[in-house]
Image (cartoon, rainbow over all chains, first blue to last red; front, top):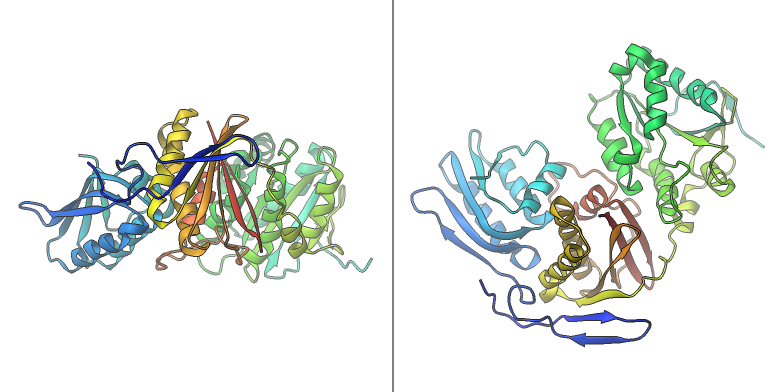
Length: 136
Length: 317
């Protein structure tokens, strides 16, 4: 997957004091570009498949997804995250907050999330209330 | 000296935080075991978080009563001093029924804590007071007077409002109590970074910064959860720089004594001394980034001031 966008960062190695030779991040793939988050409806299920990463630049998209999910009627809302490469703490927090707003009996099923999301949930929201993490 | 002398651990202010100075095993047990038993007898939840060998001593001395005490090896639970308040002390205290008075033995400073770790340890001890102000808790902090250097013992008088001298059963006020001074004094510039990969980032290159850090971490031998932890920490620190630290920052990654070290510098200033140490209420949306960094890193050191903020994290390989 390639993400369009300009490489702005200076990536350099510093050898000793004052020597700082800037050069561009090699390649123009996901490494240097502003990441995006694409969201697609799931066929035949209440839920979405997301692709990309969840961080500062995509937080609004992710929160929009969760906002809609909270308003759905089905008991289970699927979040297929196998093509999401990273979720930061605020992204995990948005998920936990949305789960807390689900009506009784409803839950999120988070499928194949990146390991960083599981780690964050385990440490900061250990009871995962309203969030079922599925590895299949 | 104007110190008032009171019976050990009572009568109680809401928060009691004595340093216990001990010379040998016997003084250690004389100072800790009755403290635990007295708490259990009063129906108080009791936790003991001390280095492994000391934990064994207390466990053996307590016998069957040890089963009623939360026992934690501080070398693991408190490896990073910055996580002891949220991950050990408040985690235990806050999980008790409302209104319970809690009793904790916490020994965060032992012979073998490195010069790199010590400033974070001293700040931790000082910040316990702010974190527990007004809470019904007694936190007893043992200090090994035979093994620890003089300046560490002197600092303990500044970080603890009360002290129990070696061989004594009496808790006295410390006339050197000045926790704010300790927090300020150990807000030290970090040792110079060695030759290192250096990456300047802004809002558009946050993802790139994380990839660069993870690439270096991997090249230096981090795998699995450790690599995830490094990615999470770098994402939080670089995002903080963009959102709160002036919009840009500089990331550095290198190796040091079996650790991968990552540092993020920006032009912001951390005004809240308890940031990253305060448990976050469940219904609060944000504010967990530095808390997570403290929970996952093996050591976090911070230097903040008018010239900017540097946060350095160590991850054991």
